[in-house]
Amino acid sequence: MSRARIVAVASAKGSPGCSFVALGLAARLAQAGLATLLIDADAEAGSLATSLDLARLEPSPGFTPLTEAALAGATVDVSAGLGCLDLSGDPPEVDGRALAELARLRYPAVVIDLGHRPARFQRELVAAADWLLWVVAPDRTGFERADRILGGDALPRVGAGIVLNRLGPDRLSDAGSVLAERHRLPLLARLPESARGARDAARRCSSPHRAREFRRPFAELARCVHPDILGGGGERWP
Ligand SMILES: Nc1ncnc2c1ncn2[C@@H]1O[C@H](COP(=O)(O)OP(=O)(O)O)[C@@H](O)[C@H]1O
Ligand SMILES: [Mg+2]
Image (tube, rainbow, N blue to C red; front, side):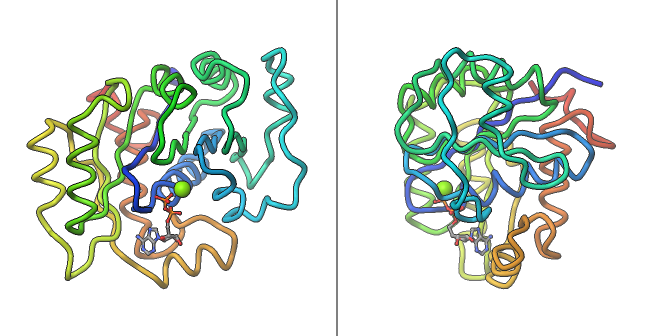
């Protein structure tokens, strides 16, 4: 088995589907047999917990000191092989990098939903990550916001790639390739707009990766970011 992989997922503002992609990818990695930890590190509280129907659970206890036992105690099992750690909202009193490295010891795959407002905690998490996935909505506003954030230094530079989400007939079909070329990043996945697929996933409190429309792109994305996925190309990337 390879070294564990940490994948951070970020976006510009405007809800292009950052949490949707983080959840779908984490669940797909778990489905492939990798124990996966999904961390909600969005500065805005609670969206992943709501979509996973975890809202009624007790809030995570603190992390002092930061130990494996504290991590295990704060993690909620969502489904077979998938744990969720809700650290959304105010940043916890821990170093994001130390937390990510601790998670790496327990989980072969860690997916982090960073949301769109990176601050100290999110930057530390990214510094420990192997991948930074930028989720982009391919409409005019989504393209312009992504172009701006990709050109800036909001987050540290690690192996990064673009995930296009919500592609439909009326969308800018070349948004992904233009951004990829301009910012020298690989275009890793293209997910369609599917209200039905998203609704099904929400209704069953399951993950978007199971909906027919999203199965293939999530499987390909999982292969890109983790070398232990069958046929994976992880060795090509950082
Ligand atoms: N490809 C898609 N097709 C249809 N609906 C989607 C898709 N991606 C995301 N959504 C929906 O859009 C809304 C916002 O997605 P979310 O992941 O919460 O955005 P963000 O985390 O970027 O704010 C959610 O209701 C989600 O189900
Ligand atoms: Mg979100």
